[in-house]
Length: 469
Image (cartoon, rainbow, N blue to C red; front, side, top):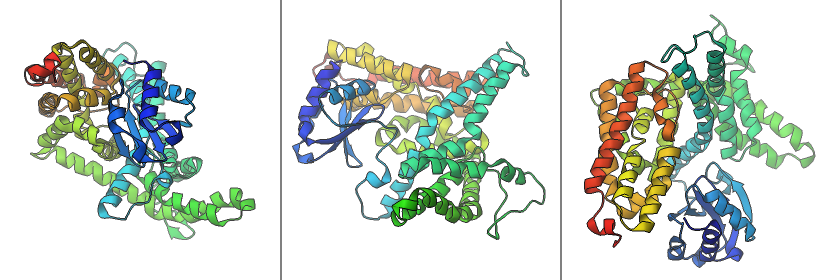
């Protein structure tokens, strides 16, 4: 790959120079510029910089796709005098985005954007907790039987897992408030209120009643849920901003948060959180019903076959956010999260075949880097932009491989239990029976093998292999 300094210099020149950059931030794979004058940008010049995989305009930003090396390129931009805003997890917050006309599509996009921006930051927490649970399953009685079920090791692993999932409303409250430009600590408080021990105990106390200012409130358990706190914070954010704007500065710090919760307590506990609980329960019931219909296998195959396309368009985030809300209710999944996981190595199979088939040295080296990034780290954007969009035909491999992986998983009843990526992907199927783990691994292997073979024979033209196209 090109030197990071050369990439930074080339990109900066192509976007109109330092004088045209208001600010630059970065996520896992992209530089995200806020520019003064978009007309000064040369898309072709940006794409022509060695090390740039593609561009995208989104949310008022000019996004340059670099891949995993983006933090180093970002640091080089700072050395060139560009104003930086650090690393981010998601797009701009709602108040940073340009105002758009209110349409049905816009409302739908805003809902999915809020869901994704609130859920995606949870993934590292859930992966960490899930992997500790996997250690407990692998070394405990479930698989290897190295340690007994009552050992301190199993207790410790389960403790980390329970902390990650049980306190999900608090963590999600922080992410949701941050997404909406509200105080993230008030978001955490909202999650904490829903989980307060004495209130939570009412849910298991027969005949217990509760009211807020005399208004009856259902006594429900909100630990290990997502939608109740997401609905509550969605309303809390504008209420907080209302008081922040209208209270005098001298009393705002004390009374804006206090008045926010004076308003929010009946709304959250009597309406929003119960509604979110019913929606979450309904989602869990719907997915369970869908999995048991004659068409459940078709839904899994469709998601598994098209998941890289969903990632490319960004549609996967909204889908996964909904699936994660369902997963939080029951702790396992045999539909969408499972489908997305069993196809995880199909893109790696495509990347491996393309690397082995290409003969032009520069493109061959790039393809190897894309394959390693996907296979080991689970970061797929470099492969999507560097191989799939460049050569087009590799889509065939991932479509066929994903469908094959999804079909085998449905036939054998594979269930997803925890979050894992890259080389650790098969651990997502640990936590149930040994047969589930084995069949999950076979599903992943089938996806990669079928994708590899399909791509080897159908994924590249002769000119592409020779480097002439």
